[in-house]
Amino acid sequence: MFGEAGKAVEKGIIEHNPDAVICVGQAGRRADIEVERIAINLSEDPIPDNAGNQPMDVKVREDGEIAYFATVPVKAMVKNVNDHGIPASVSYTAGSYMCNNVMCDLLYMIDRKYPSIRGGFIHVPFATEQGVGKPVGTATMALETIAKALECALEAVAETEEDAKIHMGITD
Image 1 (cartoon, helix red, strand yellow):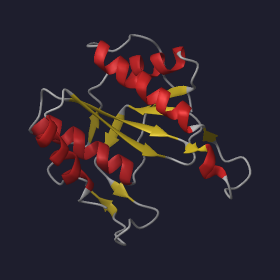
Image 2 (cartoon, one colour):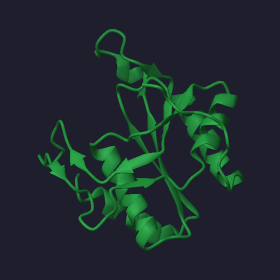
Image 3 (cartoon, rainbow, N blue to C red):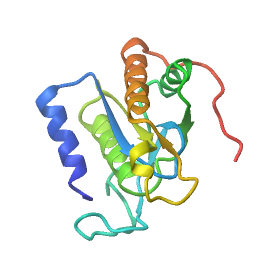
């Protein structure tokens, strides 16, 4: 729920003192694994959260920056996932719903309180089993493939200090 997810992330940071935090969310319109590069400090939510909250044109963090860049090696993560035969790409927006809020909260906290931690966000498609009853053509991926992709992405975070210098921009 809005305002609560960031608190849960910070609780995990305090309890575990990690070197990196990678949050994961599901996006039904995405067909591949998408490693997010940018979180915007804006909530513009098309549907209410579980508590009925539906912010519109509201900052995630009132005193935060306009946007935050992931501090994990986004391109290296995508490359490692692709190198293992799993479709992945860089995403240049985490949207404006809950996933973006979580990513923005995480990167705000890293910027303000936990500068030694690296952080980012990965969007995954529906698992195959979740495709049942969805509109024809809804993208899905086997849960085992999603799990392997996350493992590959985390491996890249653990092994890479400076991001890969490769073109992964988009034209649309």
